[in-house]
Amino acid sequence: MTIKQPGARASGRRDVTWRDDAACRVMPPDLFFPAGTSGAALENIDAAKAVCNACPVRSACLRFAFETKQEDGIWGGTTEVERRRLRRAWLADRRRLAKMSA
Ligand code: SF4
Image 1 (cartoon, rainbow, N blue to C red):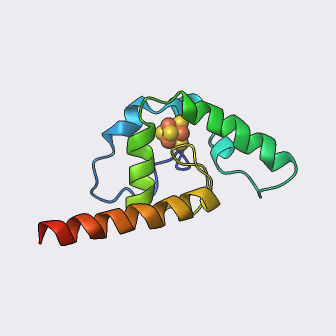
Image 2 (cartoon, rainbow, N blue to C red):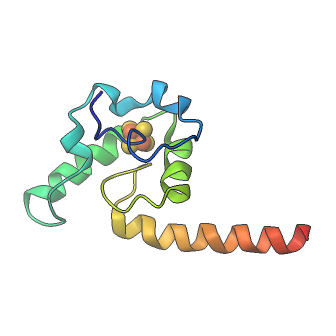
């Protein structure tokens, strides 16, 4: 897959073996990085989300996007805007758990 596959960028030293099972491996990378959030891009976003909905590694993909703060594209079936909101909740949960175990 090309460099634009989710998980292909900014992987650093993280375990990204989940990418081996990614449903998007056989899809055009640009589908997951739509140009904009209106007009024709909306159809693109819906198509990408449909792929994500059937992806066996959706949770791992979304967690990776949270951990590496991926700001562009569709990851784990979420858009940038959706992911920003979900990431805030995810971070709050992590802080709460850290406090409980301290
Ligand atoms: S959830 Fe979507 S973006 Fe993530 S690996 Fe699966 S198909 Fe690709």
